Length: 116
Length: 114
Image (cartoon, rainbow over all chains, first blue to last red; front, side, top):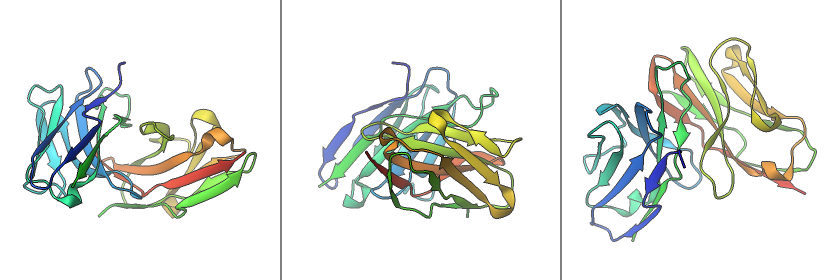
Protein backbone atom coordinates (compact mmCIF):
# COMPACT_ATOMS: atom_id res chain seq x y z
CA UNK A 1 0.00 0.00 0.00
CA UNK A 2 1.57 3.28 -1.08
CA UNK A 3 -0.94 5.66 0.51
CA UNK A 4 -0.64 7.78 3.62
CA UNK A 5 -0.70 5.64 6.73
CA UNK A 6 -1.50 6.62 10.29
CA UNK A 7 -1.01 4.79 13.55
CA UNK A 8 -2.73 4.00 15.74
CA UNK A 9 -6.15 4.04 14.10
CA UNK A 10 -7.89 4.39 17.44
CA UNK A 11 -6.67 5.63 20.78
CA UNK A 12 -8.58 5.79 24.04
CA UNK A 13 -6.87 7.62 26.85
CA UNK A 14 -7.69 9.09 30.21
CA UNK A 15 -7.75 12.80 30.71
CA UNK A 16 -4.34 14.12 31.65
CA UNK A 17 -2.37 11.44 29.81
CA UNK A 18 -0.05 12.14 26.89
CA UNK A 19 -0.61 10.60 23.49
CA UNK A 20 1.46 10.43 20.32
CA UNK A 21 0.29 9.73 16.80
CA UNK A 22 2.37 8.82 13.80
CA UNK A 23 1.90 9.62 10.14
CA UNK A 24 3.83 8.10 7.26
CA UNK A 25 3.29 10.14 4.09
CA UNK A 26 3.47 8.92 0.55
CA UNK A 27 7.10 8.36 -0.30
CA UNK A 28 8.88 11.46 -1.60
CA UNK A 29 6.02 13.81 -0.75
CA UNK A 30 7.80 16.84 0.65
CA UNK A 31 4.79 18.38 2.39
CA UNK A 32 2.92 16.85 5.28
CA UNK A 33 -0.18 18.29 6.94
CA UNK A 34 -2.09 17.65 10.16
CA UNK A 35 -5.80 18.35 10.56
CA UNK A 36 -8.34 17.78 13.29
CA UNK A 37 -11.92 16.82 12.54
CA UNK A 38 -14.80 16.72 14.96
CA UNK A 39 -18.27 15.34 14.34
CA UNK A 40 -20.28 17.44 11.93
CA UNK A 41 -17.36 19.60 10.90
CA UNK A 42 -14.80 19.62 8.16
CA UNK A 43 -11.10 19.10 8.75
CA UNK A 44 -9.46 22.01 10.58
CA UNK A 45 -5.88 22.84 9.72
CA UNK A 46 -3.38 22.35 12.54
CA UNK A 47 0.09 22.54 11.03
CA UNK A 48 2.21 21.59 8.07
CA UNK A 49 5.79 20.72 7.21
CA UNK A 50 7.89 21.10 4.15
CA UNK A 51 10.53 18.44 4.51
CA UNK A 52 11.60 18.76 8.16
CA UNK A 53 10.65 22.42 8.55
CA UNK A 54 7.40 23.28 10.29
CA UNK A 55 6.14 26.21 8.24
CA UNK A 56 2.85 27.15 9.88
CA UNK A 57 0.91 26.37 13.01
CA UNK A 58 -2.73 27.15 13.59
CA UNK A 59 -3.82 28.99 16.70
CA UNK A 60 -5.82 25.82 17.40
CA UNK A 61 -2.50 24.19 18.22
CA UNK A 62 -2.12 25.07 21.88
CA UNK A 63 1.13 24.65 23.76
CA UNK A 64 -0.02 21.13 24.71
CA UNK A 65 0.34 20.11 21.07
CA UNK A 66 3.64 19.53 19.35
CA UNK A 67 4.45 18.09 15.96
CA UNK A 68 7.72 16.97 14.48
CA UNK A 69 9.04 15.64 11.23
CA UNK A 70 12.66 15.07 12.16
CA UNK A 71 14.01 13.53 8.96
CA UNK A 72 11.51 14.93 6.53
CA UNK A 73 9.74 11.60 6.22
CA UNK A 74 7.29 10.45 8.92
CA UNK A 75 5.76 12.87 11.39
CA UNK A 76 4.50 12.63 14.95
CA UNK A 77 1.83 14.66 16.68
CA UNK A 78 1.93 14.66 20.47
CA UNK A 79 -0.76 15.93 22.78
CA UNK A 80 0.25 16.44 26.39
CA UNK A 81 -2.16 16.48 29.33
CA UNK A 82 -5.10 15.49 27.15
CA UNK A 83 -8.49 17.06 27.75
CA UNK A 84 -11.93 15.79 26.77
CA UNK A 85 -12.11 18.53 24.17
CA UNK A 86 -9.19 16.91 22.36
CA UNK A 87 -11.43 14.00 21.38
CA UNK A 88 -11.51 14.09 17.58
CA UNK A 89 -10.24 12.46 14.43
CA UNK A 90 -6.68 13.53 13.65
CA UNK A 91 -5.97 13.45 9.93
CA UNK A 92 -2.66 13.50 8.15
CA UNK A 93 -2.17 14.39 4.50
CA UNK A 94 0.76 14.80 2.16
CA UNK A 95 1.56 16.14 -1.29
CA UNK A 96 4.51 16.68 -3.62
CA UNK A 97 4.40 20.47 -3.47
CA UNK A 98 6.38 22.31 -6.13
CA UNK A 99 6.58 19.44 -8.57
CA UNK A 100 3.82 20.76 -10.79
CA UNK A 101 1.35 18.12 -9.68
CA UNK A 102 -0.88 20.59 -7.96
CA UNK A 103 -1.90 21.23 -4.42
CA UNK A 104 -4.39 18.48 -3.81
CA UNK A 105 -3.66 16.57 -0.67
CA UNK A 106 -3.64 12.83 -0.15
CA UNK A 107 -5.24 11.88 3.12
CA UNK A 108 -4.63 9.04 5.50
CA UNK A 109 -7.36 7.13 7.34
CA UNK A 110 -6.98 9.19 10.50
CA UNK A 111 -6.44 8.43 14.17
CA UNK A 112 -9.58 8.63 16.28
CA UNK A 113 -8.79 9.90 19.78
CA UNK A 114 -11.22 9.45 22.63
CA UNK A 115 -10.37 11.12 25.93
CA UNK A 116 -12.34 9.76 28.87
CA UNK B 1 -9.92 35.02 7.79
CA UNK B 2 -10.69 32.67 4.97
CA UNK B 3 -13.85 30.60 5.32
CA UNK B 4 -15.82 28.07 3.29
CA UNK B 5 -19.56 27.67 3.51
CA UNK B 6 -21.49 24.63 2.41
CA UNK B 7 -25.15 25.44 2.55
CA UNK B 8 -26.63 21.97 2.56
CA UNK B 9 -25.78 19.85 5.58
CA UNK B 10 -27.75 16.80 4.55
CA UNK B 11 -29.23 16.02 1.15
CA UNK B 12 -31.44 13.03 0.44
CA UNK B 13 -32.11 12.06 -3.17
CA UNK B 14 -33.50 9.15 -5.08
CA UNK B 15 -31.37 7.39 -7.67
CA UNK B 16 -31.26 9.17 -11.03
CA UNK B 17 -32.06 12.54 -9.46
CA UNK B 18 -29.78 15.47 -10.26
CA UNK B 19 -27.43 16.83 -7.63
CA UNK B 20 -26.10 20.26 -6.90
CA UNK B 21 -24.15 21.01 -3.71
CA UNK B 22 -23.34 24.60 -2.93
CA UNK B 23 -19.94 25.92 -1.86
CA UNK B 24 -19.02 29.55 -1.26
CA UNK B 25 -15.74 30.88 0.02
CA UNK B 26 -14.60 34.19 1.40
CA UNK B 27 -11.25 35.31 0.08
CA UNK B 28 -10.58 37.98 -2.48
CA UNK B 29 -7.35 36.67 -3.91
CA UNK B 30 -6.46 33.83 -6.21
CA UNK B 31 -7.49 30.42 -4.97
CA UNK B 32 -7.32 26.77 -5.79
CA UNK B 33 -10.59 24.95 -5.19
CA UNK B 34 -11.30 21.33 -4.41
CA UNK B 35 -14.07 18.90 -3.73
CA UNK B 36 -13.19 15.89 -1.63
CA UNK B 37 -15.43 12.90 -0.94
CA UNK B 38 -15.47 10.50 1.97
CA UNK B 39 -17.33 7.25 1.36
CA UNK B 40 -18.54 5.34 4.43
CA UNK B 41 -15.59 3.74 6.18
CA UNK B 42 -13.04 5.25 3.83
CA UNK B 43 -10.68 8.20 3.99
CA UNK B 44 -10.99 11.53 2.22
CA UNK B 45 -10.18 11.43 -1.46
CA UNK B 46 -10.09 14.02 -4.22
CA UNK B 47 -13.17 14.28 -6.42
CA UNK B 48 -12.08 17.22 -8.57
CA UNK B 49 -10.06 20.43 -8.48
CA UNK B 50 -9.83 23.85 -10.09
CA UNK B 51 -6.48 25.59 -10.52
CA UNK B 52 -6.92 27.83 -13.56
CA UNK B 53 -8.37 27.93 -17.05
CA UNK B 54 -11.79 26.52 -17.89
CA UNK B 55 -14.03 27.24 -14.90
CA UNK B 56 -16.02 24.09 -15.56
CA UNK B 57 -14.02 21.16 -14.27
CA UNK B 58 -14.81 17.51 -14.52
CA UNK B 59 -13.91 14.94 -11.94
CA UNK B 60 -14.29 11.27 -11.31
CA UNK B 61 -17.54 9.33 -11.42
CA UNK B 62 -19.38 11.88 -13.55
CA UNK B 63 -19.06 14.80 -11.14
CA UNK B 64 -18.35 18.32 -12.31
CA UNK B 65 -18.03 21.72 -10.67
CA UNK B 66 -18.21 25.27 -11.91
CA UNK B 67 -16.06 28.08 -10.55
CA UNK B 68 -17.87 31.40 -10.65
CA UNK B 69 -15.36 33.98 -9.50
CA UNK B 70 -17.86 36.83 -9.22
CA UNK B 71 -19.98 34.76 -6.84
CA UNK B 72 -17.05 33.20 -4.94
CA UNK B 73 -18.72 29.87 -5.63
CA UNK B 74 -17.64 26.39 -6.64
CA UNK B 75 -20.78 24.27 -6.78
CA UNK B 76 -20.65 20.54 -7.35
CA UNK B 77 -23.04 18.88 -9.79
CA UNK B 78 -23.96 15.47 -11.09
CA UNK B 79 -26.81 14.94 -13.54
CA UNK B 80 -27.88 11.54 -12.25
CA UNK B 81 -26.83 10.20 -8.86
CA UNK B 82 -26.38 6.56 -7.96
CA UNK B 83 -26.77 4.75 -4.65
CA UNK B 84 -22.97 4.41 -4.57
CA UNK B 85 -22.65 8.22 -4.40
CA UNK B 86 -23.84 8.10 -0.80
CA UNK B 87 -21.00 9.83 1.03
CA UNK B 88 -19.90 13.03 2.70
CA UNK B 89 -18.67 15.79 0.41
CA UNK B 90 -16.27 18.54 1.44
CA UNK B 91 -15.39 21.72 -0.41
CA UNK B 92 -11.90 23.12 0.26
CA UNK B 93 -9.99 26.25 -0.65
CA UNK B 94 -6.28 27.02 -0.76
CA UNK B 95 -4.98 30.53 -1.19
CA UNK B 96 -2.33 30.59 -3.88
CA UNK B 97 -0.29 32.92 -1.66
CA UNK B 98 -0.35 30.39 1.17
CA UNK B 99 -0.50 27.03 -0.45
CA UNK B 100 0.12 25.18 2.78
CA UNK B 101 -3.18 25.76 4.47
CA UNK B 102 -6.47 24.30 3.25
CA UNK B 103 -9.75 25.60 4.59
CA UNK B 104 -12.60 23.10 4.47
CA UNK B 105 -16.32 23.53 4.64
CA UNK B 106 -18.30 21.54 7.19
CA UNK B 107 -19.37 19.00 4.62
CA UNK B 108 -22.62 17.82 3.08
CA UNK B 109 -23.88 14.34 3.74
CA UNK B 110 -25.53 12.90 0.65
CA UNK B 111 -27.86 9.95 1.01
CA UNK B 112 -29.08 8.35 -2.20
CA UNK B 113 -32.07 6.07 -1.84
CA UNK B 114 -32.20 3.10 -4.19
